[in-house]
Length: 269
Image 1 (cartoon, rainbow, N blue to C red):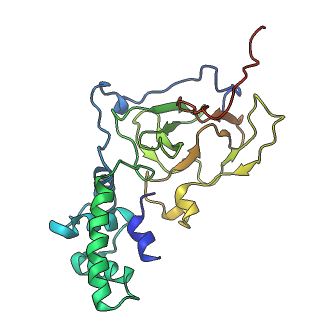
Image 2: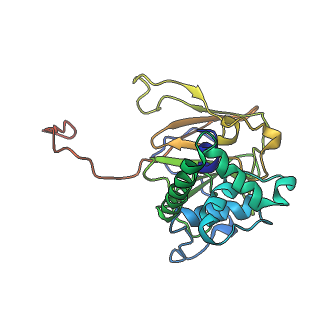
């Protein structure tokens, strides 16, 4: 979840192995030519999408305060009272970051902080708080049997964190939804079924929003999501249905073996 400003202010069907084919369900809304890459080019574009989703009636100011406003607007929903005089409210949040400094120190640190905010926004996209759009790429959809919904797993912008995000979408429309099973489900990180003898902690997973203390009923419609590390084996349970097992993909990447000798014991001698 992109919350830089807030942080600153606070100082299945039959269980199948992941390698086997799974039923795929591509909602019509996700069909765009591969060449239509809609993914943001920097963090600013990621945050502006969140601003539009969370606070569609408020525009960040132009000038030196623009990137700070974008951080604030993308960190959470602004109340109606604060939205009436957003500029003053945003300024007060920035002042609060430096509340323990002298006036002279505040001015210096404020200038430095605004410069750093621009540098962050010019940097690479980070998209844990962003739902994917058609054309983003690296989107995987699997229909949940005996329901009108599907799992959606996506990974653009999360490569350096070695993460994927997971949510639910309506199978026909592709629209994201919060848990369509209410609180009548469980999602667990479990031992890998291909190597169950290797010790691995088992833990129940919660959504990003629940981890931040947001009650299920208060999660904005369609915003609920989970973050999962590459290679995590998961088990999804719901009453009266067979559990669904899946593994989060591991992106191919070069491995630096420059400091070791590697022996490969696979295959015949």
